[in-house]
Image 1 (cartoon, one colour):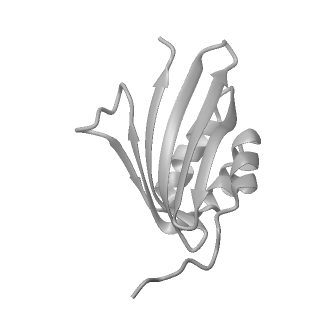
Image 2: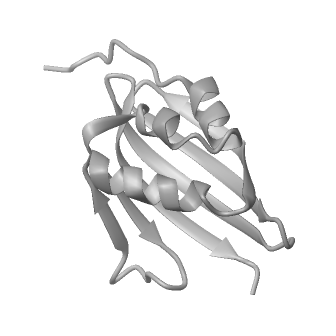
Length: 121
């Protein structure tokens, strides 16, 4: 039996949450049991940073948004059950970060996300 999703993720809310560095608004776009896996120079594929549940996500979002930097969604691809987007960030000192994220969407919320990010040296 195929389940047809009934809700669609609000991309404008996602864009606004990142632009405004609003951790609560961003967290509201994730399911209660959401997970995020982050791969970067510090957390390689064999040992990624894994966040599970709203409290872990909240702490991560609070940490990221406390930094003096801008965040802007770039390319976004959305289906009823999947989301992909690139996020471009710039620290006040000029260092740039690019993050590619792919997500499983369930009932209009992000349930599982994998992020790969790189930054200027």
